Length: 170
Length: 466
Image (tube, rainbow over all chains, first blue to last red; front, side):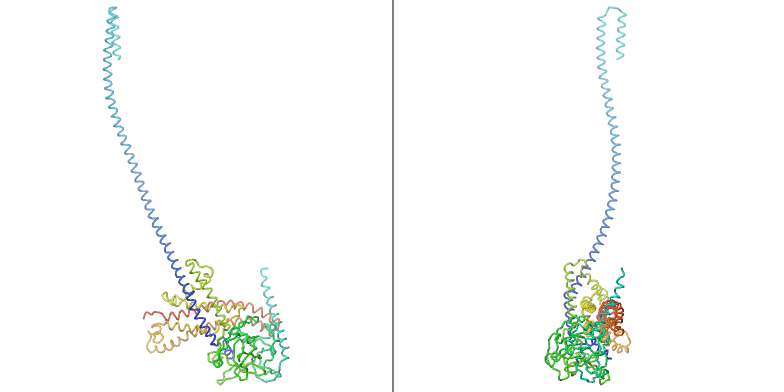
C-alpha cells in the first residue's frame, strides 16, 4: 500500500494538468495550422501529381504504341503502293518498249518503203539518164563509125558488136 | 584485436563499479564525521525514514558539500529509527542501504527542479497559489536544493521534499521569509479506515513540523489530496513538454516549408525523417479507421497525439537529459484522454448515440443492459488510454532504474567486487531494456493514436442498417 500511496507519478496534480492541457491544445492548434494541414495537403497534392504524371505517361505510352501501329500500317501501305507502282512502271515500260518496237518497226518499214520508192524512182531516173547516155553514146559511136566508115567491113562489124557489148554490160 | 571491446567492456564495468563503491564509501565516511557534530536530543520517534539511493552506491556524495550544511545529513536509511537505541536524532545517519523502490519512484516523478545526474540542478519557475495567502512566484533554487532534490531552505512557509513543493501546516513554522531547515522524516500511520497513510515532517530547529499532502486532485485515492495551495509551477515535466513541443514545432515547420517551396519534389532531409511516420499514421491509422471522406478533419489531432507522445517518450529515454517521465505521468495521459473523450463524444452522430443507449438489432430486454455497459464504456475507453500509456512508460523507466540499481544492490551485498559484478550485469540488461523501451516509445504512441482513431471512427461511422 505504501508503494501505491507514494507512487507520485500516478498522482494527478493541478499544475501539471493545467500546463499539459495548455501546451497540448496550443500544440494541436499551432501544429495543425503550421504543419499538419499544409503537409497533408502538400502530400495529397504530390500524390495526385505523381498519379496524374503516371497516368499521363501511361497514356503517352499508349498513344505512342497506337501511333507506332499506325505508322507500321502506313509503312505497309506505302510498301504495297510502291510495289504496285513498281509493277505498274514495269508494265508501262514493257508496254512502252513494245509500243516503241512496233512503232520503230512500222517506221522502219515505212522508211524502207519510201526508200524503195525512192530507189525505184532513182532507178527510173538513173535508167532514163542511162538511156539518154546510151543514146548519146550510140550517137557518138555512130558518129565515130561513120567517120571510120570505109576502112573495112569486118572492122566495122567488130566495132559495132563491141559497142553493143558495152551497152549490154551497162 | 577485432574483439577487443568484448574484453574492454567488462574491464571498464569492473572499474566503474569499483570507483562508484569507493566514492560512496567515502561519502559514508564523510557523513559519519558530520554525524558526530549532530545534536542528539534522544526523542524516541518511531520515524520511518525514507530509504533512498544512499550510502554504498552510486550517488556521488562527495560532490555534495554536506559539510557545508550544519545539519547536513538529510539522508535516511530504510530503517525504523526507533530500533537504533541511543540515538534518536531523526536526521541521524544510519547504515546506508540502497532502496530500489524509493529511488525508482523518485526518479520517475515530476519535480520542481531539473536535475541532470547529481551534477546540474536547473532551478525552475515556481508558481504557487494558496487561496488564503495568494500567489508566490520565485525560482526553485530558493529552496537550496540538494541531494534527493530535498530543499534545505523554506520559502514563505513552503519547503521542497523530493522535488515537490509542500506546505507546512503545523503552527509555529515560520511562514515568512527563508529559513534553513533540517531533514525530512515520515511516519506511517493507520487512518480511520485502517489504511496506511504516510505523513511527512520537516525538522526545523529540532522540532518536527507536519507537511501537507502533495497538491493533487485525486482526493487522496493515490496519496496526496486537495490542499490549501495549488502548484502551477513550470515543473520538470512541463519544461520537457515545452521543449519537445518546440523541437517538434521547428522540425515540422521546416518540413512544411520544404513541402511548400518544392511541392512536387521527392522528400529531402527532414522530410525524409518525418514523412514515413506521417504517411504511416495517415494511411494505416486515420484513413482505415475514420474513412477517406472525413479523415482530414481529425488528422491534425491524431498527428498531434502521435508526435507529442512519441517526442516525449523519446525525450525521456535520452540518457543524461534528466530522464523525464512525462508520458509515464498519469496527469498528462489523463489530460490527453479527456481531450480524446471530448473529441470522440462531441463528434458522435445519431447512430453512435443510438448504439450506446438503445442498441439496434438486439432483443428489447437486452437493450437497457447494453446501455449500461456501453455507457460505462464511454468512460472506460479513455481511462484505458490513460492507464496504458502511463503504465507502460513508467514501467519502462522503473525497469531501467532497477537494472541500474543492480550495481548498488550488489554493492550493498558484496562490497566493491559486488558492485563490479553488478555493473557487469547491469550494463547489458540496461542496454537491452533501452532497446525495448525504444520500441515501446513508438508502439505506445502508435497504440494511443490508433485507439483514438478507432474511437473517433466508431463515433462518426455511418451505419447501414440491418
